[in-house]
Amino acid sequence: MRKNMNMDTVSDQKKPRAKRENAEKKQNHRNEKKVYRNSGSSIRDRKLRQKDSKKSIYNVVYIFLGLFVLAMGYFTYFIVFRSNDVINSTYNKRQSVLAERIIRGKILSADGETLAKTVVGEDGTETREYPYGELFAHVVGRFARGRAGLEDSENIRLLTSNINPIEQMYNDLIGEKSPGDNVVTTLNARLQQVAYNALKGYRGAVVAIEPKTGKILAMVSLPSYDPNKIEEQWETLLEDKEEKSPLLNRAAQGLYPPGSTFKILTTLAYMRQNPSYDSYVYKCNGAIEEDGMVIHDNRSRGHGEVDLTRSLVKSCNTSYSNIGRSLDPDQFFALAEEFSFNKYLPVTMASNKSSFTLQKANSNAKEAMQTAIGQGKTLITPLHNAMIVSTIANGGAMMKPYVVDYVENTDGGIVKTYSPQLYSKPMTSEEAEYIGEMMRKVVTEGTATKLKNMKAEAAGKTGSADHGNGRAHSWFVGYAPYDNPEIAVSVVVESVGTGSEYAVPIAREVFEAYFNSENK
Image (cartoon, rainbow, N blue to C red; front, side, top):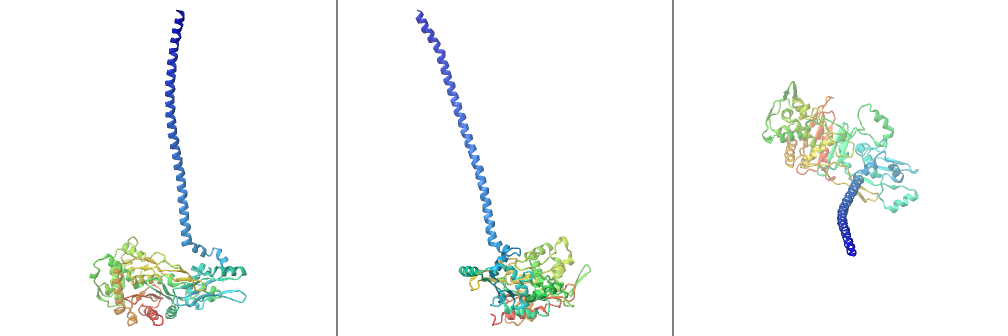
C-alpha cells in the first residue's frame, strides 16, 4: 500500500515539472522567435546602413569624377584656346628660352613680299629689319621698344620652329639656332602701297577688307614711323611735340565722329521702326530747328521734297534730323549694339571700342537729331566702319576681320591655317539689299559721283564729320563690284573738308588698284 502511494506521489511530482519544462520550452520558443525577429531587424538595419554607406561613397566618387571632368575640360580649353595667349605674354619666361634656340621667323604679305625679317651678322648679332619702313608699321608692328602689331600677337608663332625634328635636334646639339616659322598675312603689299601713297600728306586711315571672308587686304595709318629707326627716334616719338600721334594705329584705335556715313544705320533703324518706310516724305528747305538748335543742310536752299532713298543719296541733314527725333532711342541703341558699338572688335590687334550713347534716359530731341546725322557723342574707328559696310556688301553677315592667312615653316610647309568666321548677323539679306541699292545711287547720282565710270561699279556713302576743331573730317565707306562685292573700303582724312572732295578720290585709287588686271 505504501509502495503504491509513493509511486503516485512521484507521478504527481513529475507532472508540475513537465509543465514547467513545457512552459520553459514555449518561452524559449517565444524567445527564439523574438531573437529571430530582432536578428532580422538587425540584418535589415545593417543592410540599410550598408546601402547608405555605399550611397555616400558613390556621391563622393561622383563629385570627384565631376571635378575631374571639369578640370580636363578646362585643360582642353586652355590648350586649344588660351595656351598661346599665356605663352605669348611678355611676362612668360619661355619666350626667352625660345629666343635662345630659334631665329625669329619672317612676316610676309599675301603676294610674297617680306614685311619683317631677322638678319644675323657675322658675330651672331640679330637685327630685326622692316624692308618697307613705315608703310606697314602699325599693322606689322615692331619688335623693339615694346612689341606691337603682328610682332606682338604672333610672337609665339615666330619663335616656334617646325622644321624636321632631327635637323632641329642636330642644331641644338651643335649650338646653332633653328629658323622660326613664317607668318603669312592677308595683306596685299601693292594695295597697301597705293593706299599709303593716296593718303600721304594727310592724317587719317585707310582700311580695305574682303567682305565675304573678313580678310584685311590693306591697313594704313598716317602719320607713321619707321620701325627700323625705333631705338634712335623713340624719345622724339614719345615727346610728340607736333601732336601727330605717329605711334597710334588710327585704323583700329582712332575714334572719330562718323558723320553722314552713320546715316546708313539711321536708315536701317527707321526701316525697322516704320514698316511703311517706302512712303516716307520730307520737304527739305535747307535747315531744321529744335528748341533753339538749328541744323543746316549742305545745300543752303535745301533739297526740296525727298523720300528715304533720296535723303541718303543727297545726304540730307534736315531729313535725317527729322527722322532722328522720330525714332525710339532705346531701339536705336539696341540696333547700334547689334552692329558692335560699345564692344571690343573681334580682332587680335590693339583696338578701341566705338561708342553710341543715345538712350531715352539720358537724351532729348536735339541729341537724337545730331546722333541721326553721325554727330553728337557717337564715335567710330575706321576698321569698325569697314566692318559695317562689309556687312551690307555681304548680305547682312558680319565676318570676323583677320590679318593672318596661315603659318608656314621655313621650307614652305603649312603649319596652321586661318579660315573665315562669321561674327554676327545684324541685318537681314533683304535689308542689306535695300540699303545697298540706295548706296549704289549715292555713286550714280549723289555725293560720290567721282566713283562713276570705274571698271567695277561701286556703292558707298560719303561723310563730313564736324569735330569742333577746324575743318570737318572727310569720310567714305563703300564696296565694289556692286553686284558681287570683292572689296570694301573705309577712308577717313582728318580735318580737310567734305567726304566727296577728299575721301572719295582716295577710295577710287584703292578700288582701281585692286581691279587692275595685273593685280587680279
